[in-house]
Amino acid sequence: MDGEPAEVVYEIAKGFVYSSAVRCRACRRKERARRDEAKRVHLEGIARKNQARMAREREIIMTSSYVWFHWALLSAVFAS
Ligand SMILES: [Zn+2]
Image (cartoon, rainbow, N blue to C red; front, side, top):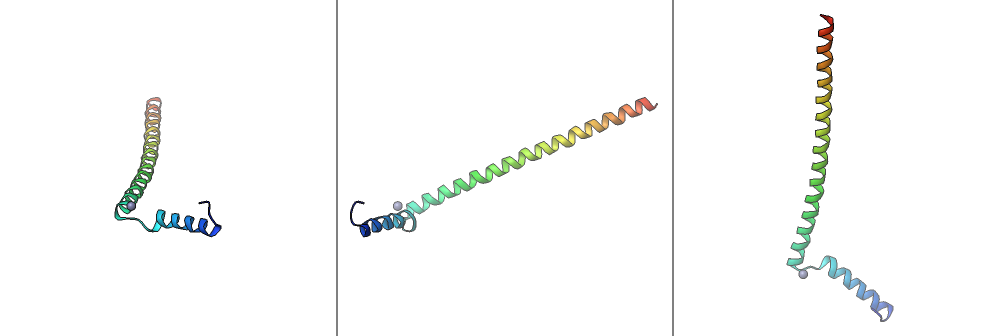
């Protein structure tokens, strides 16, 4: 990488070609596995977030129905 500018450009271009387009079967498979893994982790993160949100919503519903039940119970007791 210390030759003429044209040579440098050629070396860089070769690097791009080798690192992206031209890959052997093993490298393509490895890259696909890496991408699949990244996608899996990403989707798992979303699923975990959704589960946490659903648990929070369930808790709010349970708490509010608990409060409502006791309010109704106390009202009935004091009304009688
Ligand atoms: Zn390879």
